[in-house]
Image (tube, rainbow, N blue to C red; front, side, top):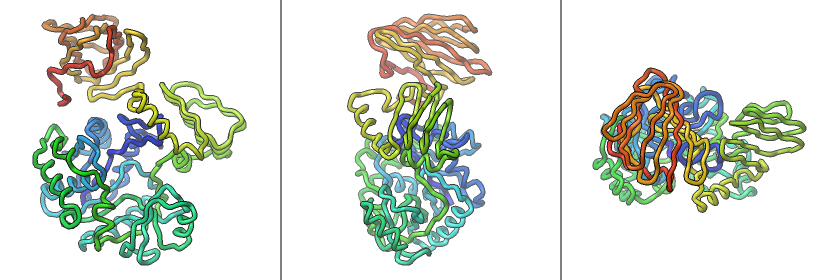
Amino acid sequence: MIPVIMSGGSGTRLWPLSRKHKPKQFIALFGENTMFQETLSRLSDIDDRQAPIIVCNNDHRFMVAEQLDELDISSANIILEPIGRNTAPALAISALQAQSMGEDPTLLVLAADHVIEDIPAFHQAIETAKTQAEAGLLVTFGIVPTSPNTGYGYIQASEKNVTSPVKRFVEKPDLATATEYVDSGSYYWNSGMFMFKASTLIAELENYAPDILANCREALSKGVKDLDFIRLDADTFSNCRSESIDYAVMEQTNKAVVVPLDAAWNDVGSWSSLWECAEQDENNNVLQGDVMIDDVQNSYIHSEHRLVSVLGVDNVVVVETADAVMVASKDSAQNVKNIVNRLIDDQRQEAENHRLCYRPWGNYDSIDAGQRFQVKRITVNPGASLSLQMHHHRAEHWIVVTGSAQVTCDENVMLLAENQSTYIPIGAKHRLHNPGQVLLEMIEVQSGSYLGEDDIIRFEDNYSRA
């Protein structure tokens, strides 16, 4: 069995914690591990699993590799999507790649951002599904509903409380319809988790979405292997139509079966669902970080960088990050997407990046900025290097705070120790390398007419960035 982890989402409903370049699946919302890592960890006791296939956005590739490494999981099957095309193309690529590895494996398709608390019940459902998948069926996991939730699609089963053929898939209903579904006992929440043999999915794609299959086969065959990554051919994959696996196959095939799953599942799709999943105090509050409250009930309050004090409120969400604060009624917090869309329309960086931005070599924190200047705190991992690059519009002053830095500036190569500094003129070809065994921390002061991150011309790069 090969786990296929779908981790391409952007998680905008959990803004400002979740953003385009570091979405919720790569954040530790519960404990030390991220949701992506928890998804993999809950499979650790399954004996016949092989190395996973990860499908992710190209921009997230180094986070995926780093978080796999933290779990001591080696995988040469990190598939990079140059552009999001929904789940049908992603699963078509995964099935084709799995077949190319030999034999005809069974694929367990999981989202990277779900919470499942009852692991034994989850494993039992996997065993049930595996029997069905090996018999040539397409299995979907139906979540036993706990309420008439209007935020989920529904699956109608032919029989109640047992594995049975799918009767139909239903879009997100209104409250009255959802209540009827739950009362009937024949409907499940659509989890977006599946199990099937690679050959079964490919055959059904050939029947119901041959254009998607052909496009994905070409994108994979023209792709290239880069480090641990499989880079799909961007032009070919971008021409593929965007379609969910539900629409492309599951709603049309006669091979779909649903396995009931009652395992305290939650897709953490909103602040209210995050509040439901987290441990609450005696007043039904979830408090994280440096928080001080008085007369507060039923609320979620999260602080990352400073003291947050809240008084005399009920049923609210308060989230503080280094560059944004959000306050919302818990009942309306799912509408945070409206704020994110406005940020995107206004081309605000807060929609895409945190102030602390991660790179394959380390990270940088934009600690101050003004007209014609910007100050960053840069951290470079031991042995890591930034690209050999130049800027058309800005000069840079570098001051080493801890560790040591090997600096290339045009033809000059120098070694800087703590409290030493150097100057990189506009147009100079330069590179920063950490030759030591400890983190390199430095302050960078940029000055110039334009300070955008796109003012970078790369000549050499260890991480195959354009």
